Image 1 (tube, helix red, strand yellow):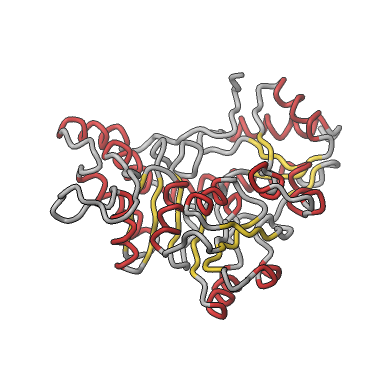
Image 2 (spheres, rainbow, N blue to C red):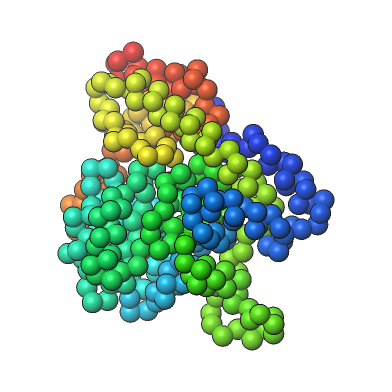
Length: 352
């Protein structure tokens, strides 16, 4: 079904076409093109981090980060219950085991419950900045220090949240704050980790390109065409974030006090505008009839078939998943568009 008011839409209003055309005209369209390095440098500089290593997706970024840190079979990684399943899958791809921790009221990992899940096999913790809300990274880093753990930040939904962990991983999928259509990038201050990330993403070729590969690696490279789009997006990131802050403000003001709606805590950067809704499925059907798209919250990892645990119905993450949804959230959403969405939500609950 096509919606007049989709949940997301990429904001391709800068120099994307210029940079992309330049890459095509120069013939540098593979991962060897200079646009890749330009994007990596620009995004690392924006975040105040020494090294950026691009790749083919946010999931690939997480997988590379865990592998670069030496995570593998027999290891455990602390992962939030409330997240997109790719966070857990990246751990599984390495042969390690994800160990899940329930969320707090802001949907982020409940940092007070991390320590009870740490064992002798725990090697890392993966905080996820859900919907653009920054995790309590002071607490996460303190726990990591005490237990000698590595920290991989899943920042797929949080461009603009400055990283503090060993490696931060961003998605550049089309619905993210900035995009390359598909793609991802890892940020780190550690030059050795950056080297290992780059080595693993490019099939672990030796320097002489002899086709002798000493470890299992990946073809997770970003093309110059993707990097061209991503570079133009980085150049506009401050403006994109500012527009999204205004979208958040309008929703907050327009939906405050609506009976049946529970607003969620503020976001450090706005990826999606999330809320909790009574009679959620009826609301979604009503809004779809008005050509307004909505999406559901993530389901707990312990409810996923490959990680199924009988206790999932008791999780706070499950409670949120049962009535949570998010509304159209993208920079192409005009004030008039947003007023219409707000009006229709209010009308459904008799608050017009």
